[in-house]
Length: 487
Image (cartoon, rainbow, N blue to C red; front, side, top):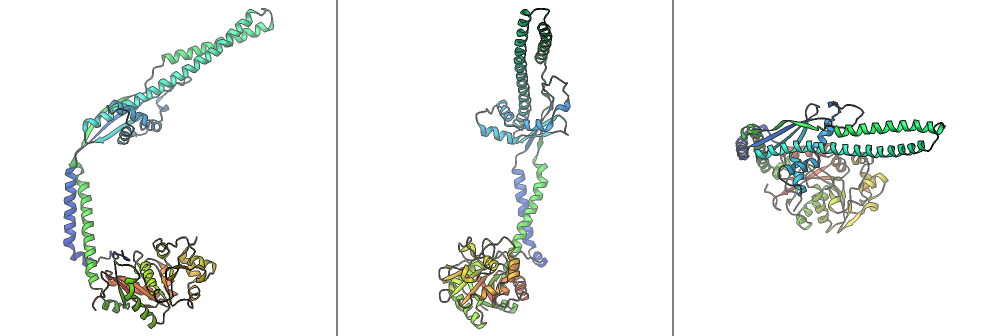
């Protein structure tokens, strides 16, 4: 693959939209047809819901319970738990052996609280009305059953604790009674034992009372106040939003078709003569989908001739937009020139897709370290085949600010005597200020354009470069073939 398959230019005038109204209408028609087909192909959906009134089932015997003792949020979490889903799966006959089935069932059900009251609503939507109704009812019943089981378990734990305590108190009471039997009635020890006996008897009576209250406690975790009901969501009820979405999609399809057709028409008018009138004459042409230094042989000769003509040794290579191919073009051009000359390639593109990443130099020190530490080209260059390369490097701060503060001139001058050509690969001129800063310090600038770019964008890019101080000597044109268009 070569540098790019072409830039995407989304500039579309009202005139172009007017000329493309047929495409827009066709897109709308296609979108509408697809929306209707999709809508009527969908089966009817049924929603079932069951409502449960939650009641407190605590075992705190020191006070009476009330509806305020129910925390709706906690109860909703319990209703959404896996254990409730497992019991519900068993109730609807799905079994509990398949964990994935239980998890899927849990994902289908929706549980919500009703206005912060102790009321939970279980709802589910499905194309099978009987299944939706059964699942909603099963979850309501499963939740109440789990709640009842938890309450029974709490009571059993409390009763076990009370009976254990009663056994301890009874043992102490028996010991006191034995002491009374062996102690003289008129002694102080006898009177103390009598007092202890009264306290222990009172404790045994209280514990027996608590156990009796637990045994007689009526557990009511709540009740289903609204059995599983069904509502049907028909295709017609969903027709309007689906048609609206289809219309939007169709409009976008038509607009995209209009964009690309208008772009193609404008690209056909961007010939070499048009580039010359803009002030960026075509220095050479390269195939859009072919890479490698050999494919740049003819470009190498024309670029070298242009640089000699302008007495330029340091040349910046940039393009119109950040998505363009400046790094690849600069890389292959440098390698091609390097077959016959001493060439240094410097990356001023700090993006991940720049020269540094393409040549595998992401971890090596480069331009930013050199600028920050006052190093020369010789200290940070890396050999790559027949050329030397300085990667973009890394900095904790803003690369643009570092370039503005230090400048590239001194760094570039440190290599002028060692190389025939120094090529600076810069990012897109319209999307990144780094391109302005990098090309300002070069002897000349080459603008990479795609023959599918419009005149407006090329003219704007050329104006930006000139305003930044760069000497724009021409353009490298990406085409479908290696041959230059006829002028």
